[in-house]
Image (cartoon, rainbow, N blue to C red):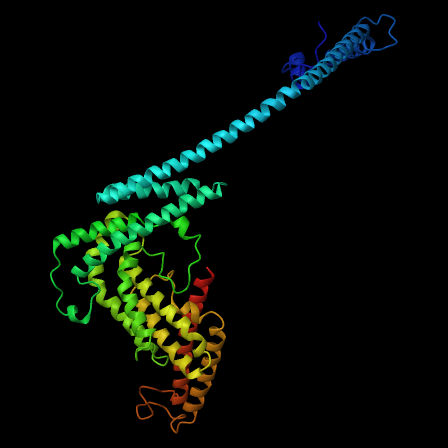
Length: 450
């Protein structure tokens, strides 16, 4: 039997092949053991360097020597190739330098060509815009201005600062021109639709012609399309007293008459501009919201819904614009209010009522509001101090009442078995009021942090 190849047979497979399922006898085991022992001796004999007949060992050595020779030859060829390549690189270096310079000049020429192509594109669209304005072609005007916005989006991250500035200034120039053009027409249409609403046209709302409403729709959409890109607006430093640029452009224009009235009455020299009467301008804002809601729901909301222009309603955006006026006024008054506890306390009370009413009317919590100023320094610390002082004064006042320790329902024992004193009732009421207030303030501060 041939010697088993132990490198290719598993031990278990070997024994299974030799013995099968029968239990081997002693003679069979001895025979297998002898074969394995003999096979082991033959292997040791073949690989023994002291073997007088080293047929296999000499073969191993010869193969190893051949491998060493091949490696040596390859190393020599590699060294020759390295020397040849180094020599070729030295020869080619002047050619490389020459073509590198040419490639650089070519890239500069391509960049210059691309630069002039951009200027040519902008100038071409300038001519198209002038022609469209001359012939009053609204669709062409809007299409051309859209291209200006696309140009700015494409070049705004470029390192060519002068080109970026040129495209930006061109876009802003045409925005101002078109805003003036469409804005003036828009204001005329608003006048024919009795916007803004006043006390003289509120009681009996005039019939609004379908032609005027159609013109209103067209101009509203046109103004939306000429709005500056959001990416540009975010790069600008917006002043506190500037109009809210986050609103849709036509809504900004619709707010302008109300903004002028607000400044005239509450930030000028009129008798209505009184530091001790914050309720006057806060009530006026709530009145304007109420008065203009019907028109916004009838004329503007359908446009926003149809064109998917905003995730917030027109009413909410107009509310935001009007609240912005209140914020501007309050910030202007704040330094003087901080010098007078009585005025500050009264103003805070009015702002709390105003903010609660806005919340009841669905004012989005993510929008700016007066509570954000109250819950910020330096107003917040002063406010806490006033609340603490007021609470102590109220406690002293109701504890000094003659009925402080008498039950409110002492003559009706079936209502109050425990005979809770009046002072305890008043204290719980005060505590609940402060808890609700502080919870409201906490929510506002949390929104501000988010």
